[in-house]
Structures are given as structure tokens and as C-alpha cells.
Image (cartoon, rainbow over all chains, first blue to last red; front, side):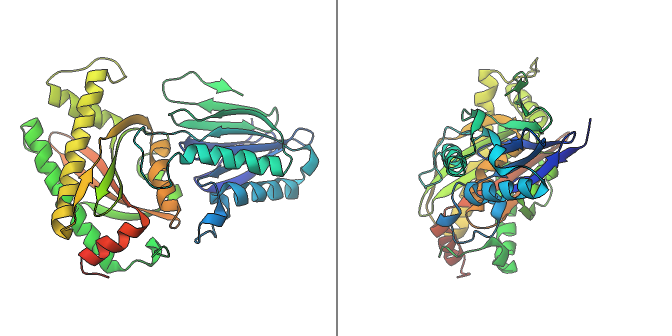
Length: 161
Length: 204
């Protein structure tokens, strides 16, 4: 087994098999794993907000779905992945609380998932699997060797997508 | 108004928040003591401005199981407030409140609603101090409670702070009776409510 690389909130990183990459406690944020199945180079982004263009203070690239995914793709390609072979798996985007704030932050988890899918579609990167929505947190571990995306949640059996 | 940045906020504002946190947490402690009918002490609250990635670490890792109570705020200012308590501390409080030892790892429905009530009283006491200090009318909404990973719970206020900048402001309060209980308050005013709070405090 290789090393386990950690990605924080509003953060992204790349890794090469046999290393694996993880982000802990995804709530309404979305974790996006991309991979080139041939070179077994992968990357993981942990985005918080759907759209960098709707916010003035938007210099933090990995914080947003649009800029974060673009940067993730750029970095895996720089590491040696083939752009046209990239595939993705996504997880997160939960609604942690039933209470709704009246501001536009309502359903931010769902909007994060939508923005993520839109960006991946625009970049023509197919989504092979997803575990999104619902109302609980998720820890994810991505293995570029196999493409396995392991998902852990409190009080639930571990799943692999 | 929307170019408010926590990074640029004056030390004076942080000091006011600290004082607010102190008074609020003090009221919350009194409320807690009344509820549990015992003496509860409190350490001076710590006001912290943290990067998102530091949040989980502070609470013992993103995967630490916490109880998070979340309420909406309406009235002169709008936004939300969250109170977080580590799971074992939450269990201890609920057991004490209900006067029994609970078995098992999961909260029962009754424990869940008792915990919600604890959160309601604590956040209510905090909001009362904010209201008294600012003369602003503040109504809390019905609370919602979840027990999950710290990172996942914190993503909710972090995302709201994320619209403003790359840091989050939180108030750490330690309660003592026979053991130490770490609690965290996170107040998230909506964008245009920041200036109302600052103005009411005479800082804008």
C-alpha cells in the first residue's frame, strides 16, 4: 500500500497509484475524484460552493465547483494523465439540517452537486458513479489503482462505488 | 456592504465578539445550571478566527462525532447560529438531565429531543445576550439537531462563511461540573446583518 494523501476543506490534490487520496467529513461540500485508468493517475477536490462568478471574494480556486474542477483537471494532466481518458466519481452534497435559512444558501448541497455535474459535462468527463444528497456526512477514499471510491458514514456500512 | 471580510475586521470588533461570547456563554451556563439543578462553571471563552482546514483539527479531527444544533435567526438581523458539543459530552448532559444512564451508542428519540432542548436553551441564552447588548430584536427559529462527523456539521456554517472569505469565526466555551465539556458557538449573520450588528455596537 502506498501513502494516503489528505485533502482538506476547499482544497485539492493529485496522486499516483499505489498512493490513495482522502477527504474527511464531507457535509454539504462535494468531493470530486478524477482518474486516468491507463496511467492510474488520479486527483480529488473538496469544493464548498457552486459558483465562483457569483462571489466577489473568489481568489480561492479549490473552494468553488467551477474553478476547483478546472484546476483539478489541470493538475492531473500536469502529473501525466491523459485529458481525454479522464473519468469521475462524486460524493457529498448532503443537506445536514432540515431547518432552512431563508437566504440563498438554501439547498447548497444540492446546488454544489448540480454545479459539479454541469462542470464535468462541460469538460466532457463522464461520471461513472455518485453517492450524493441525503442528510449525513461522508468520508471518502479514492484509489487511482482501481478507481474504487470508498465511502464511510456514521452508523452505516462502508460502501464502494 | 458585501465586501465585508473577516480578515479585515478590526481587532475592536473581535474584542466585542469576545465580550459578547463571554456574556452569552455566561448566560448559557446559568441556563444549563438551572436546567440540571447543579453548579456549572465556565472558563473564559476563546474567540477564534480559523482557516477552514483548521476547524476539524481543533475539535479532534474531522471525523470526531459531534452533536450539532442549528437554528435560524430572524428579526432585525437574519442568519443562523450553531452550537456544537462532542458526542460523549452530549450524552453526559442528556443522561444528567434525564436522571438516568442510557445504554447503547445511538441516541434514542427521547434523548434526541432532550438534546435539542439543551441546544435550544443554550443558544437562546446566547442570543438573548446579543439582543440585550445590541438592542436588536432577534427571534430564533425551531432548532434542528444532527449527530455526525465534525467536518460534515461544520461544512454548513463554513459554506456560509465561505461566501465572505476563507476563515470562520467561532467561540469555544468550556463548561465544568464534574467533568469538562467543550462547547462551540458559531454565529453566522447574513451579509447585510453584519453592518447592523456593528452599527448597533457603535463600531460602524
